Length: 218
Image (cartoon, rainbow, N blue to C red; front, top):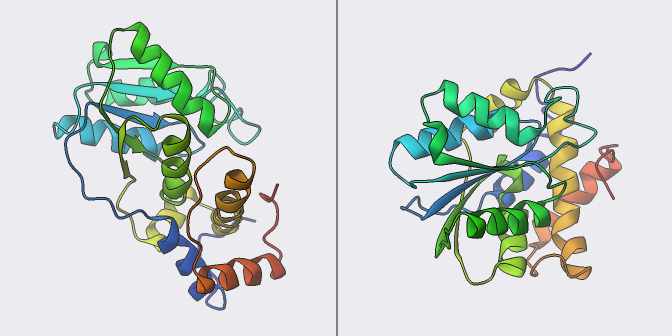
């Protein structure tokens, strides 16, 4: 059975990865907010909140499905995100959808394309994602859409509160480990720009792998 309680023996290493993936960008107004599809509906909630605060005038929700989301969002991640944002008061005309993207690179290139089709060519974008996806989203955007300025944001939840919102501590840890691997592996494959990985992050990552958190490794 899934638990929302983080094992105290793992806390230091999990917090190390959690903090590493947070880009720490100050919020500022951008031309467009892009909600990156995932299993976490909190991304859509946060996107709606930022829109209502006036941080961008237009939203793109992007995402088809992954094996981890099809049961939760059977009509596709972007479609469910849009419906949720509208239920929170975002006007439908402020939202553009990309329902085809299946990875972060496609999230960004498809968003650029649907915006261009609508006559919108942003100089700045805010990428709204799960907390542990920020660094990968940033590195990918700088590779595939280098002409835009990038701000990253996620729900400002402490680690324990985020785990409680997802309902499964092991799932969150596995995702953290998987995203840490992708920082270096995707840069090596040419999918993203390189990012520094401090030694203490490298050690924490390998200790969590040794502890069995390998389900999201490539």
